Length: 105
Image (cartoon, rainbow, N blue to C red; front, side, top):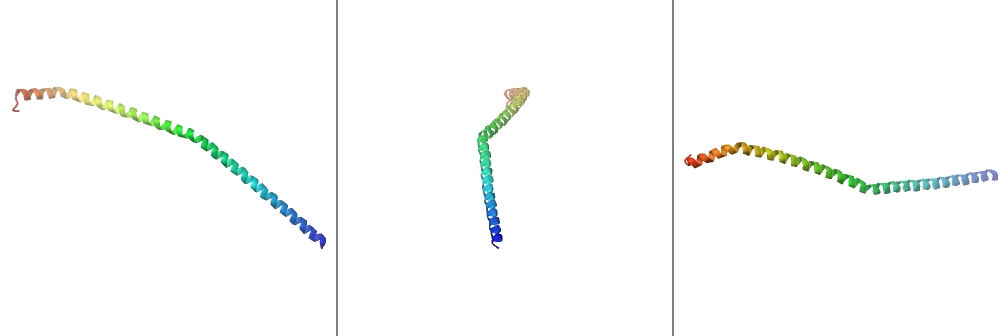
């Protein structure tokens, strides 16, 4: 009976030791994972200014393209209006002369 009791106590001690080692390993793995997560977070945080610069650069590029497109359209419209004014200039001069010559018209 004493021998059986001693074996049970030894088995319980080994089980407690294994459980303690498992808890230590679990804590070590948790700490390692937390360290890795912090390192990843730090890398991401350090990368934010680059992301911001890239975003600003792309936004400025799109704005410059939009400005160039608006200027191109403005110039096209300006040319159209100038052409139209030149085409109608003769008609306007004729109408003005007619009014000067015959104000009753």
